[in-house]
Image (tube, rainbow, N blue to C red; front, side, top):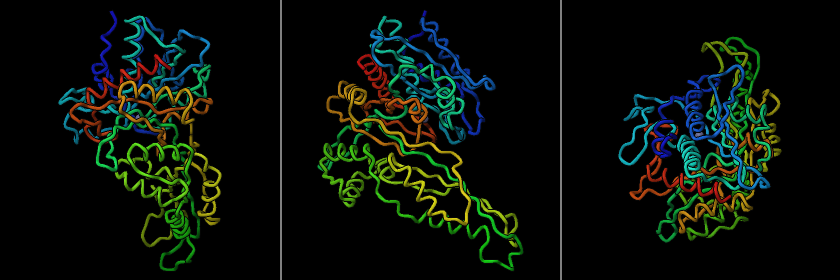
Length: 441
Ligand SMILES: [Zn+2]
């Protein structure tokens, strides 16, 4: 007998697997959670496969290819990650791995990032098995490891070493979008908007190393390693990166302005700034995705106050809008200058997929079918997800992890923080919308 395909119970079950990812390969491991999912799918009659790097059996991914009714159609990947960020358990009001249902929410680490989507994927598969239903096109479901670090045990590894798993797939749907976001319009009314993520800024992590003569601090040379590093960081942090509207952000500004009753002139930087200001908190990543950002996050030099160190290092987090990679490379070189060595410690280019076209239109249609007054809009994410890995296989990538409105106004909360939770009704709505999308697309 297959399990009751209830998305709330499934989410509670997934949360009870502690899949904390501490970064740098340190992890509690995703395998028990992956085996639980594979077991449910096998009981329902599917043939899922577990994949892991040969040296890391504790970091498993689950992949299931489901043939559609029309094998002529291009396939679609549906992906979610099983790992979660670490918790400070003392700060929580509930056990972060208890799968607690309380006050209309499911609580727990991963409740909204992104075991909610994984449970919706799973519930949809289990419902199809019970009802002898299924998709039109081939779907490849991927429940992956290690998204919260670099994907080296998850999506990046699967794409590099087992691209055959995704053969024939022209698009991938995953983190994050499709979440009901009530926004205040210019006339004070509330409009329910639904971001559909079509792009992500690139992530360029830059490591700077300055060198100079070491010696006694009472006899400064005036041109030592620390000073060289500080000069470069000063230029990086004070640079006014120019406005760089990617296609998706340009479409996003227009798509937000219209239903909210604002005007925006894309040729006028002041008009764009005024719209972002007017949106306030609701602007979300729009405050950052209109240009490059360069943020120093780690500094290291010296071991004693009266000793001039010979080496000083810094790490800088640089995010780059789609279409601005080459100019960012060039500007970084200019700003850092020739007195400091630098390299990319990691580098993932931006991704961007069409606003419009069959995939995007089908995502919007699924939202409108469930909320006829809801307004989907294209979104550019400020950070990064596993979409960057799947894009390497030439797929269009979209963020769509739907969560609907809660009748009492609850919202998901606590992502990467304390008391992470998702409203039950939002989750149930999201699962229905995901299923509807996967059947129609
Ligand atoms: Zn996530």
